[in-house]
Length: 168
Image 1 (tube, rainbow, N blue to C red):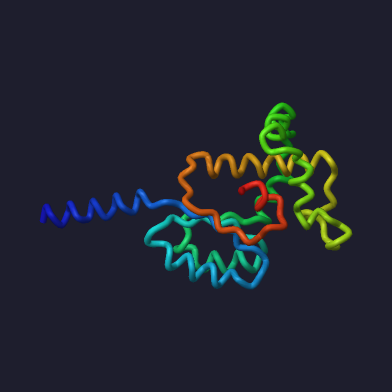
Image 2: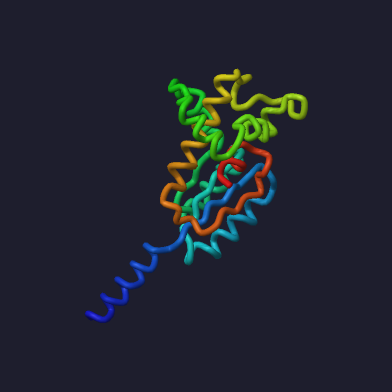
């Protein structure tokens, strides 16, 4: 009985110390393939994901037992629009000192390129200050998510997006 209890405790502790993986599930048709990959990795890793696209989010939600945490790109964007807090200029200058121009990152997002896609970023056209605010909020999101630095891998194929660029 005691040995069985000890074995269960070791198994529990092993699960608690699993490394983390962060996966981007973008608009492409590979969401189901990444869900299957996640199922096979679940025993060894805690899997977190950022899901782009409402239909993808529904598909991932149907498999929520596979994931430790699921973040919706659209929900985050809408929260960013509704957040009235302005970006901290000193913090932005510190970020630029570390990684270079924030505008290179902002314009890496294909949804911001109106000449390429006829769609707005989120629900409406974005102004200069809103883009800075988006950058700041995406930066804060990833800083908070990755602050423990215990993610083993980042799997990212959503390369033409500000969040994808910021997280790497």
